[in-house]
View 1 (tube, rainbow, N blue to C red):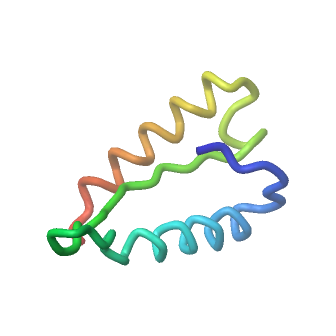
View 2 (view 1 turned 90 degrees about the vertical axis):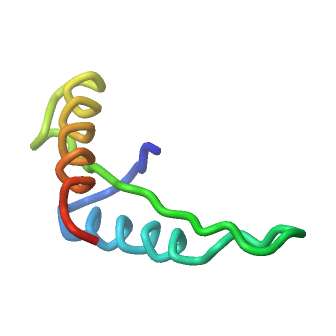
Length: 71
């Protein structure tokens, strides 16, 4: 997911928390509910990279760090 018009790292953190909050709710299905989870890695232009490739690599590393943290 690419977010536009993110001003600061604090803004990015707030948006990330909103997305993570939405993932806390299970998806209702006819057979019951399906739990949903996700790991999010972020990067911010230009601090974390000047190109799309650099930003994606930085976000990928951040996502794997997030996955390694206990829930």
